[in-house]
Length: 304
Image 1 (cartoon, one colour):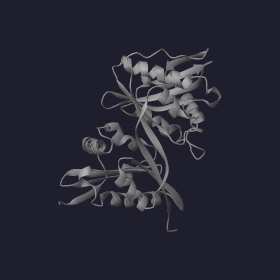
Image 2 (cartoon, one colour):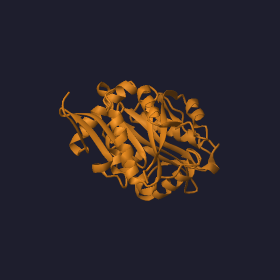
Image 3 (cartoon, rainbow, N blue to C red):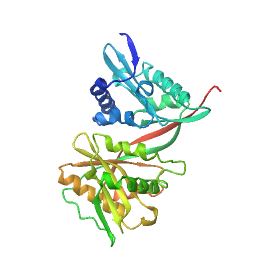
Image 4 (cartoon, rainbow, N blue to C red):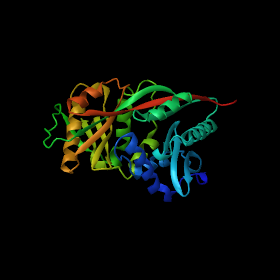
């Protein structure tokens, strides 16, 4: 075993970080699922300090683990060949110490564990993390023929304009999501939300808006994903407009957009706390469950 170095990640590390994430994906998901955006998206979050909020573990010149934390959400990745050596536990302790440094008194730290990564979940639970809820990942091979969206009278679908629509889309997202994630959910703020538009996977042509009387009544925000796949990041309908088929129409519209681009597979996650029963919509469109991602939480208390 060579010397171990713990340090902040650099721009030069990004290709190695992508390789690390994909090595984890191969074991935990079954196929590579990460790109550069997945590796660095937290780096752009307001208040994120890469020198203090992210860490790589390097051994003999190779990066074997990576962790980052922002907004009391932590991600810890250990190369499958290096698991079982205590590296993940060391990073967990470092992340927890950093969160306590940032917050006085009591704070809840969140981490996710894929259902196949049973060892990681067991370690988190032994360290005091408790299951909260889960996200179901669903996917579909986009049909060769997709029927045109059936929209209510007076509703049209158009693409998003970052210059003129950003604030109104954010407002619509906040209204829709209040009932999607439970009462404890708090919006991340416009600045943090808008950082998504700075990423390499952002494309305004796959942000679609359902509009009635020049007001946004529904939306679908998608990203490009590795492996010629699309990803639905957020789908929402304003509460007063639910039950009109707008969500289904937006999904059909994005199917057609992706199919025209030659993208043949689409995925998303749906929370077990989603009170609008969105899973039923996705199943009606032919989407099936791939795996689950469990959200675990631990209450940390400072010595003071």
